Length: 313
Image 1 (cartoon, rainbow, N blue to C red):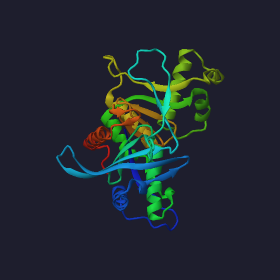
Image 2: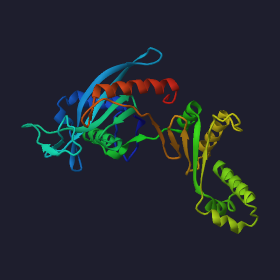
Image 3: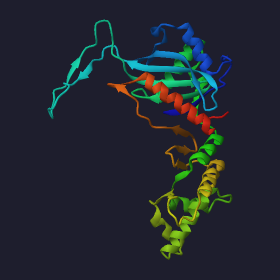
Image 4: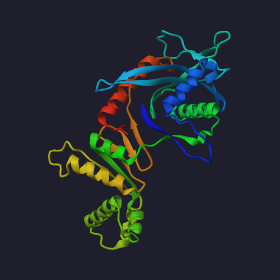
């Protein structure tokens, strides 16, 4: 599951609806009650909002919130489905194909989505996030006579990254540099950022370790990549969890691209984007997930994120 935040973008003189994402989609769905009216053509496929539900969730404070739940899926009009014998004890089996029933087409996988105001949590199956978001953009653009580029599912702000670090801690920082290139750049830098200071310290330590005093020898480190891995389970650790959080916060506040921070819960933070995600197991039928099961997981994850303070406005 992935968390994103929707926003309108000012482009030219286009007049956008004074609505959040949830209100915008609700207005469209209430006017398009037939599934066929929610169709979007994307490249060589068609996608549909096959299911939608105006629902409620109760958060950790026992507050009730109105939410919108969606299922979006592809279908290919001429496609067949592959079949295998079941049950079968054979190591090798013959694969066959089957046509859809008369006057029907197969649906393939999909993505389940929860929308609350401008917050969106997605659970992609065979339809990825980019395709699901493209469907929503094109649907809104078509109904409000807009350019789809005036909408985006934006990366979260620095404040959200810092909240995530303080909540989950830091396990790994990838500096995304090699030492030789870094050593050449440092001669030109006056105001060194956090990443620069760490890399320069590593260079000095390595040169000292190998008893290298001349600058030319650093070229032998040209292909050495730099990353910092932390194991806080060691009783003799010389750096605390708090210090690691402070280090991660320093990277974010530097606003210098190229780093990647992995939290102890597996979330990844980069300069350009923050991926707030969680892996779950959803019941499925073939390649299609159980929509009700996925929607319940999305509800629980929203409550979890809200409780943590990560998605506070």
